[in-house]
Every structure is written in C-alpha cells, then in structure tokens.
Amino acid sequence: MTAAVGLYLCLGLPEPWLPTIEKTPLIVYGGSGAVGAFAIKFAQASNIHPIIAVAGKGSTFVETLIDRSKGDTVIDRRDGDEAVVSGIREALAKNGVSDVFYAFDAVSEKGSFQNISKVLTEKGGKITLVLPGEDFSAIPKGIEQSLTMVGRVHQDVDRRSKAGKAGVKTGGKEFGYVFYRLMSKALEDGWLTGHPYTVIPGGLDGVQEGLANLKAGKASATKYVYRIADTKSRL
Image 1 (cartoon, rainbow, N blue to C red):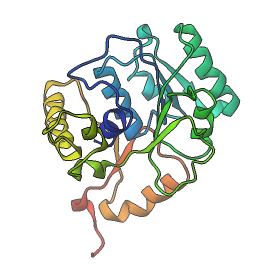
Image 2: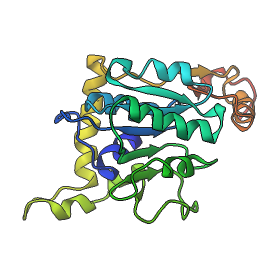
Image 3: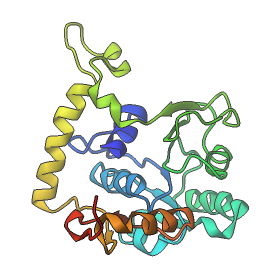
C-alpha cells in the first residue's frame, strides 16, 4: 500500500484501472526493496514506461520486474553516483525523451535524492520520499516534494479532494478502501505477487541474526520471516 500511496496519491500518476497511453518516464530509486519493487509492479499495471530502476545487489531480481521491450532499464547504484546519473540520462535519451517528471525515492538517503535531483525536470518535476525527518533541502525548489506514508489511507481528507467535484468526498480512506480490494483481486488473479522472503531459523531466537544482517547490508531483495512456533527459548 505504501507504494500505491506514493505513485497515485503523492505523484498523481494514472491508476491501473485507467492506464496511461502516453510515454511516462518514472525513476524508482531502490527498486529491489519491497516498496520500490511494488512501485515497479503497480507502474507496470498502469502502463507507465520507461521505468528507470536504480538498485544494488538486488539488480537481478529487479530485472524480473521490468519490461525491456518498453524501454525499462536497471541501473546499478554500486557503480557510483556519477554512473547512476549518467545511466539515467542515457536511458532517457535511448527512449527519445528529454524530461522526466516523476521519481519515487524508496531509499531517501545516501545520495539518492541528490542523484535524482540532477536529472529530474526542475520545473514541474515531482519526487516522493519515504524517510520522515530527513533534510531534503538539497532538492531544487522547483521540484515538488512529498512524503509517502501509508498512514494517509487512514485520513478522512486528502489534498486531491480539493480538486474534485463539489459534494464528492474522496480522500485517503477511500483510496485505501478501493486499493486494498484491488490488491486482493490482483493477488488472486496472479498479476500481483508477494515480495521474496527468507525464513530465519529459530523463530524469535533468530531476530538478532536478522538485525545483524540488516545492519551489515546483507539483506537485498528479500524480507525476513520468523516462525514463532520455532522459538526454543522461553519467552
């Protein structure tokens, strides 16, 4: 749902039930994480292309999500900031577009939004980020910033409702109501799938191992799962 909020409530991109017919470049920074991966999946459903996904160790996984025939590409962030920026520019040029107006920064640190700012169109560009409390002042003032938080689906009023028809109340709650049902059907129909996961042995006794892996940056393109029934120590 976080990915859906970012794409549709924050960036204002076309929803899957009204897919775009126009070329719509989208940068997804952090494409192998759960939020970034689902952003790519939903963008595919909305016919949003070319998708320019930036990823690291999980680049191979991200390749399974994109459509190269529609101009999508994966850029390896491990090659360095300059390579990321030039890679995005090259991808845009290959697709015959000079401007990219939309970026979903599912990392929001370690140079991600700075790199995006160098290629995102400054007048009319939109970037949504996922880390509250960070200093995003490096983003040019001409680029519209927003913070993606799943809690928006619990809000009665959303800023998009201000542009709606008089007497029609639509906001985050209504969006969540509709989209949760769409996701349930999509999972049932098979065009939406869950994120890869890894079961950590030992149930809750394995939590420390999982935390250590996260701190060491070993977790990539996967979610850790703990089976409580496998816990052997006394709680």
